[in-house]
Length: 378
Image 1 (cartoon, rainbow, N blue to C red):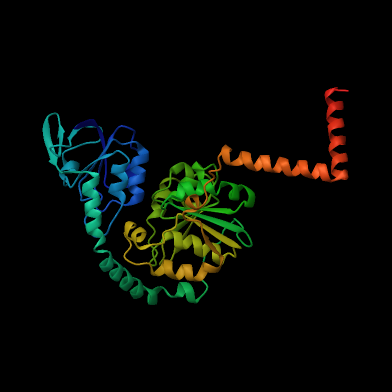
Image 2: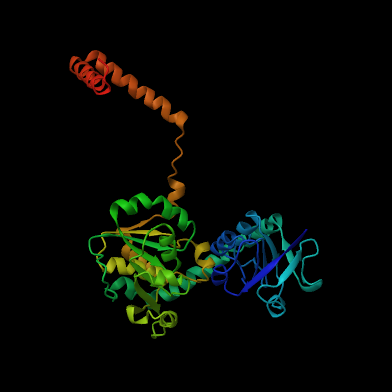
C-alpha cells in the first residue's frame, strides 16, 4: 500500500500537533511514543506518522503506538535522522508500507519498519516482562529524592499570592493526562453548579477553554498552552527551577505577559504545584482531572521517580478528590425502553392513590375541572 501526502516535521510532538492538518504525514523523533502524544496525533487527522526513533524501545510497555495504529494511522518506524535532514515542511512524499520506504520524487529518502497492530502487541508483551525492573528503578529513584524534597510535606510551603480567592472554595485542577477531556465533559454540571476555581496546568488550560470555561489560574512551564489562552486574563504562575532558572518566562516576555506573571521555584512538577497552591491557600475541596497516578503514566512523562508527587498527595490527600476516569465510572445510558416501565409504574401508583384516597380523588377532580375550564370544555 502507498500513501502520498504532504509532511510536517517536528522533534517535539506536542508542538508539532498544533500545526498539523488533516490528511498530512507527521514526521517526528519520539522514542517510546506515549499515549497522550498518540491521541494528539490522532486528533490532528494525520494519515501517517514517520518516526526517526523507535516508537517502542522495549524499556516499558508504552501504549502510544497501539493507540495510533488502532485509530487507522500508518506508522513507519525507526527511519533515522535522515528524515529530518533530507526533507522540508510541505514536501510531498510517499510511504510504501510493503517496502517500508519513504520516497520523494521517486527517490528513496529513508527506510524503516511498518509497524502493524500484531507487531506492536508482540512488542508490548515483550516490554511488559521488563516492568518489574522498571518498578525497582522507579522506587529507588523516588526514595533517593524523598529526603531532599521532604520539606514539601514537613512544613508550610511558600506559595505565590493570587488575586483569585481560593480559601473555603472548591478548586478544580485540570492536567493534560489520560482521558482528561472526557472527564472534564462529565464534570460540566459540577462546574456550573459549584463554580470552583479553575486551575489549568499547561495544556489543561486549553482543555478548559475548549470545554467552554475560562481558567482562573494557569500554572506550568508555559510550553504547551496556546497564545490566546495565555492572553485570556488568567493569573499566570510559571514553574521555575530551584536555582531560579525559568525557561517559561521567556515565552511570556515575547508575548508581553511577563509583568503579569509570577515565578515559583520549587522541586515539584507543575501538577504538584497546582495541588500545593490549592492546599496552602485553604481550598475546601480539590478536584483533580488528568493527573498522573501510576508507573506507566510517569514513565510516559519521562519521569524516573515520583518523590514530589508522592509527598504532595500525602499532604493534600484529605481534601483531594481524584476525578480520573470519572467518565467511565458514570455514563448515562438509560434507554427509552427502560424508562417507559418506570413511568408506567408511577402512573399506576398515582392511580391507586386517587382510587383509595378521598382527598387525593377530590384534588384530582378539581385539577381536571380547572383544565377543562382553561380549555373551554364545559
